[in-house]
View (tube, rainbow, N blue to C red):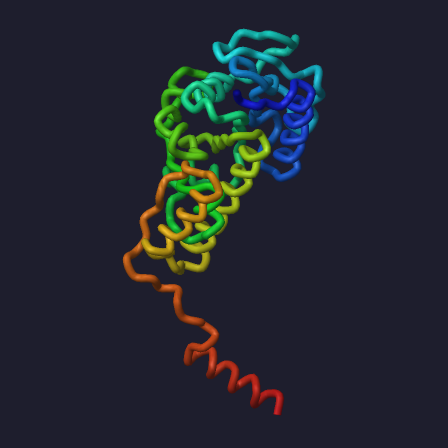
Length: 253
C-alpha cells in the first residue's frame, strides 16, 4: 500500500514550494504550476492565473487523475494535462513541478538538452535532462511530448518553454528543479564563459550511478563520457602553478 501525504500536508507543501519557486526567480508573474498526489486517484493542483508566490489554500484545486475537479472553486492550471500524464505514466511519482528557471529555460530555447557529465551531484540527484520537442502550451501535444521520459528520467526541458521535474515526493520534485537550474548554470559557465570543461569518464560515471542505485534511485538515464579520465591530476601541482608559487614566494621575500 502506498503512503501519501494528507490533504492538509499537500496544500501546505504546494504553498511552500510556490513561494520557493517565486523567491528563487524560477517563475515570473503567473508562470509555473505544482501538483501533489494524495491518493491513488487524487491530487492537489495550483490554480491558473495566480502568482505562485501569493497563493492561499482556498485557491488550490483537488482533482482526480482524469482531470475532474473534486474540491475547490478555482480553475486549475491550463498545464494540468502535463502533470496528469506524468502521474499516469509513472505511478511512483507523488509530486510534479513546472517552472521557467532562467538558465535551464535558455537551454530549452536554444534546443539543447542537459546531458554532459560534468557534475557529480547532477548525476546523483538528477541524471540527464532530455529536451522534449516543442508543443503548444495547454494542448494535448504537451503531455504527449513528455510521456516518453516519465519513467526513466527525473526531469525534462520543454522546447522554447521551460522545465518539468517530478519525484516520489513534492519536495524531491522541487529539489530536482533546483538541481536542473544549477546544472544548467554549470554547463553555461563551462561551455560559454570559461570555454573549458573536464568530463567525467565512463568508469567514473558508472561508479556514481552505482552510488545512485544504492540510494534507491533507478531513474535519470546515463550520460556518456570519455573512456579516459582527464581529471586525475592535481592542477595545483602543475608547472604553471609551481611557477606562480615561486613568483609569490619572491614577492614576499
